[in-house]
Image (cartoon, rainbow, N blue to C red; front, side, top):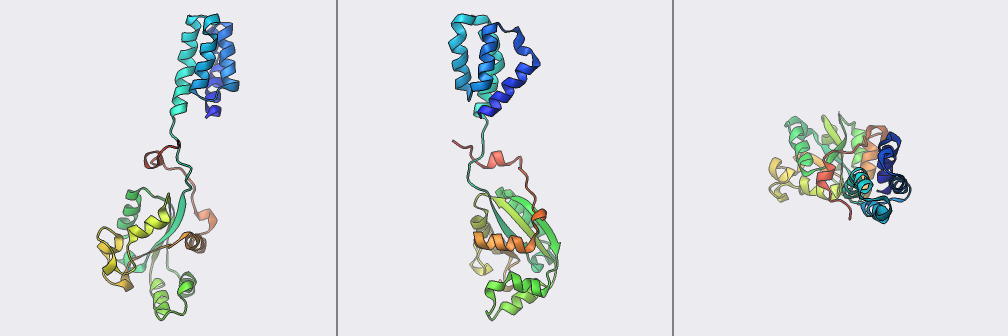
Length: 234
């Protein structure tokens, strides 16, 4: 925060606006640039010089520096909690049923940020790699056949707690066990046609994102909505 206040003060000094101040006032302005770290610091500098410099320049200097210092000291910053990323895929049944926008809308409405998306038809070999942890299960071959049977929308979503809560948005594996309000609870009936996949943990998310996306396909940006989603740090 001190660097922000210093930058504001420095710009004002360079602009020449402080030349109207008496010598004492300009010295305090310079002191604010080099030492000030918050509104309280600026106030302390001005107050300590008030007796020598007089009220007139104090009011002028205060009008220039104090509002900027107070404003910057109150600027909210996001919590330090790390933003997670998770892999979400709309399976061929979800694509064919026209549920792409519905599913994206639910993640966006929650407040999560889309950082990667593409439409592709996975090969059978690619599907086998994706479901490698289920290799040996009696349903493994059927899963891979289905995932490679048509277009899949692959996505990466970002946000605080997105891995765990993304699974809650999706619902239980079996739509019959999914709560109303979840994607599967509202939009699916059969476990073999449960329309969506989501990473089940941090390590899985990392591996699935790396499998489906190249690093350059992931977009890093700050959403304007983030200041309304996350509490400012203390």
